[in-house]
Length: 137
Image (tube, rainbow, N blue to C red):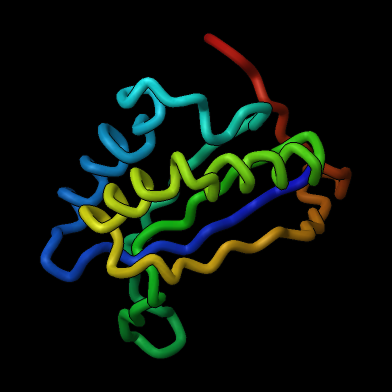
């Protein structure tokens, strides 16, 4: 499994609620609304995690994490990820994506990372845990 994470900062004139509403109802469905080929074919999972800062128990302060959203996509292979990146950056699609991102993000300079994960055993007897992807109910 290959995992991608992107870090996004909302436009400064948007509330977090407006940012979430636009991302969920417009940006994340842009290809479908515009009749374009899907930008993330073969993705296994596509998740947006909206950050709500909490009090740090050590400092007693709320620290700005620097981003408002972490977007995660799981792929079966790096090749599937790279195919998606080619689609997103294609000359036919890129202007549409950039225009839509201007309505949502503080800039286009959004970090894109791949992830190496290690799980700690968290079972009641120290056994490994896992998460399974399930389609439907």
